[in-house]
Length: 610
Ligand code: M6R
Image (tube, rainbow, N blue to C red; front, side, top):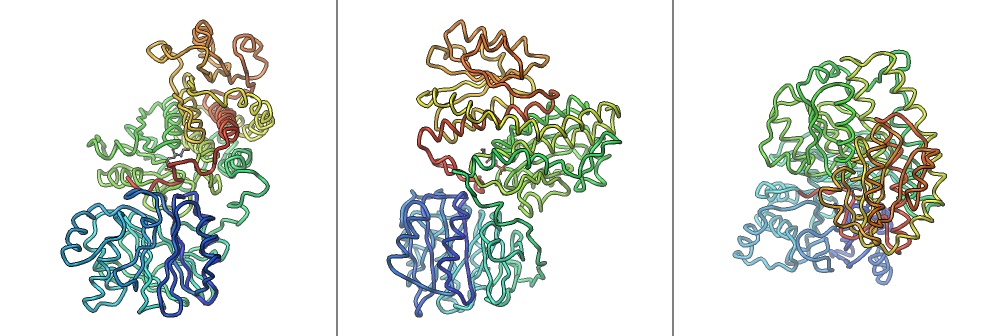
């Protein structure tokens, strides 16, 4: 949520900042701004809307500076407009600041600063930071000290970058709860909230941890804790390639990411399958396998799409390991005094690894002594670093706001964890081997589903004007129904609900009429006949039916207005296949409505506020 990028060196920072902001735009995109030091003055240019609007504005008043910080915003406090956009200035325009996160005690701080004569220009919480730092500068501190002192008075979360006219040789950055990374160049350095903004320039990075501040010069950096202890930071190598975060020839990142799934799914299990032993090997869990297998209970904690993956994980783990599993919304887990014991294992699933609710829940679970494991996509992310052990899903960077390939890779990793633990309990060698054989076939089966793209697009055409959608599935495919509905609503703004198919008759059936499309996820599995009965119930009320089913199901052809026939697999892996046509359906409906599927309104890729 919100993106930060900065540069200090010898080149003109402007093109670097604009390019960096564009790479971060998926994190927030309602307004943007840059701040530079030029001809002995600080200059800030801001605009409402996308980064391209800011870019046009900057082009009109040509500026060049080897020092700059920039921000793309996702509004929390104050509407998205030019005044509320970052950077924010102090009173005499000598100090400017960009901020990700939320300052929880900003009302108190604001009142206090106002009583001392500070005037505020914006409605944001962030502006208090710049005035607070200014106050400590005016007491004779240097910039790094002033930032440290100011942050000691702040409650909340922040990733900040600050520029100061009197100390133009450094950008000062700090982090708590919002990511901040320094990119190391040759006689130039970079800062960003996300390595994606840096990899065009450097693969050498330094991740700041919570409670750390740093002064970044063009040829070095100095890091401290906010309590003034000097710290030696390790320089790490990032392995992401530029083409992984580029759209290539695809019209949208979302489509690219859907189409990448045969490969991303393969990457999630590559090198992790032990065919002969009928189990998996997960480097990040080595040494913890037995501890997990002996857990009294497994809790899965996540948000959004990752929570849906967790629900599928519940079905997998309970079926094959016999360990009771609970799935929690991270936001609820943290605030409802959950019962957690030292014999519990808690899996935290997060694509971005930065979701504030999930991170906070993880810290709480750690405090209560449970074994805390992370399942993340973004390498080096806060959740990955905070967890005791864990598994990367290796789906590759996901840029589209609607999560697609991360979901299917999360399911693969949950399947790998399931067989790892189940083989230590009572899953037989033969059964373990047969799951692995099926997993190996999944990428090819996804490729076959992707060949149905035109067919699915033609179905989408018929539903562009629908106002509501119902998604129904049973067993393993109930969470897929929830995920299909979420995909549709977040990018097409069509109201959609997911339900267990049998629940329909307990309420949602009242909605069915000739205008109500219902998507049934109905592969030929043990609950197929039950789902057929639910389909009959919708038919009897003239509802329109789209059915996802497995190949050669002519029976459903007669019952549903549209069918999408996909390859079959074992029940536990079926969601990896059934999710794909639903992603394509949502994508095509949204595109046909003329919407920006990669940057849907009001959303941001990683939700770093609670
Ligand atoms: O990065 P995370 O997996 O922690 O994100 C969780 C949700 O914010 C995320 O899945 C969200 O629901 C997506 N927009 C779904 O497409």
